[in-house]
Length: 380
Image 1: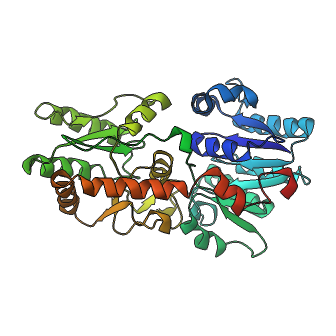
Image 2: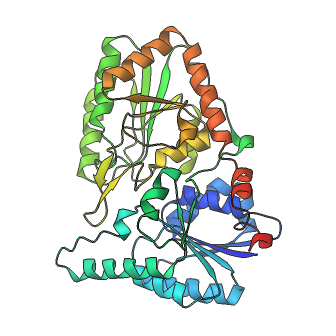
Image 3: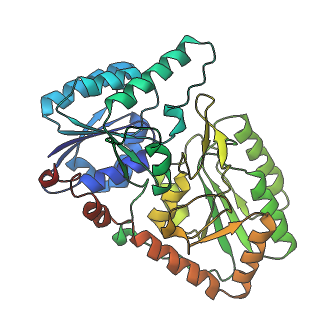
């Protein structure tokens, strides 16, 4: 079977799709923007040469690249096209799907409400974006979401004959698993992701550091992400001020944290801290709810690296994660749990083992069994 996978920015999700479709009789073409292709090639390693790469040249527009996708799909006889991250030019992708009636098209929805709730701001650009989203949703018959907790929200918005599948943002590869070291001496906590006020509450990170310093709880926190706006710069400045007195906070004053460095830090991590803002607005002034209409990338980190996590009490997660998370309403509750780990390291071992059991439920073969009609020619 010939498969095309299109990616703009969520390269870690595209990596999972490539691995899921990577069967002996399948031929995969990756359509990608250059930054995503760079990170994908690192993740794939020596396997990258086994796939056909169509990378958007800097000299052409994004709309023109959609035409490149169309011509390549026709020339190569691609049978399944996965549109993993459509962030703009929605009308062009809708036309792409309509012009390929014999091609099975799947669309990943990262922000569900954004495709169904339209906030006009008086600009032609916003009007065209909203119109394009409507056309794209109408054209596509099969959708994927990154968490099973998002299925209900999407099902309530589309006709019953349209298909919804959950394909998570990461898969677990047992051969790449590295068990975290013991917590003796220091508990390594990582906050993965872009330093973005709309996604995470970074003030809670500094509150946690202050409480742990006062209670002699040995932690090291890493802000594992670049910053993209003034809020991010403010957090970097606050981190610099903090570092004058304390030495247990690390951050990256860079535009991009490359995947090798990201992986290195995550392999040394004991706990993922995900202080998500459950209700947020990121695209087109439309409100999303993490765990209901939008999935945090931190869930993918939990799967891929098999690490337990600290998450807000109100964040919806799939049931597989229930034993591998520490939930909190107040930051002091996190410190209480960390204090218990400090005094009784076996508590962390239990969390670590639960995280591993959780991740085993996200191996590629699990999804091959769950969706037999998707990944191979036999099921096409």
